[in-house]
Length: 117
Image 1 (cartoon, helix red, strand yellow):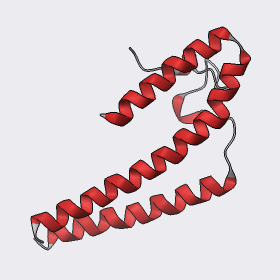
Image 2 (tube, rainbow, N blue to C red):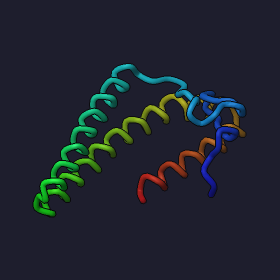
Image 3 (cartoon, rainbow, N blue to C red):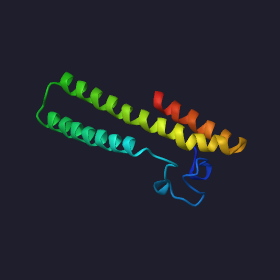
Image 4 (cartoon, helix red, strand yellow):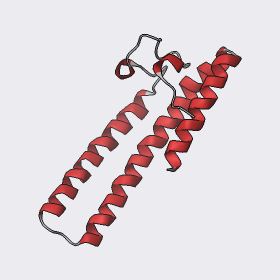
């Protein structure tokens, strides 16, 4: 199943002419936004730490353990974003009618599939 394009967007965040980088969420809880930004800054620091560990020829198992921590931290941000997408964007699309709902279902299935890979 192909990934949804800007033209397929059903959540009200974009129009057919909106470039992907300019799309906006229908609604974002400011607390969630702040938590996600804080998490991403922490992850950025973890990645810099990984670079330093490699530069210093640290023990491979220690580096791999830190990489796992970064993966889990990113999954946490992804879960928050998925929750927001379901709560606002998907809900708006599903309530707007059968056509938009079907497109949103396809988008959600695609997102979930990408998460489990």
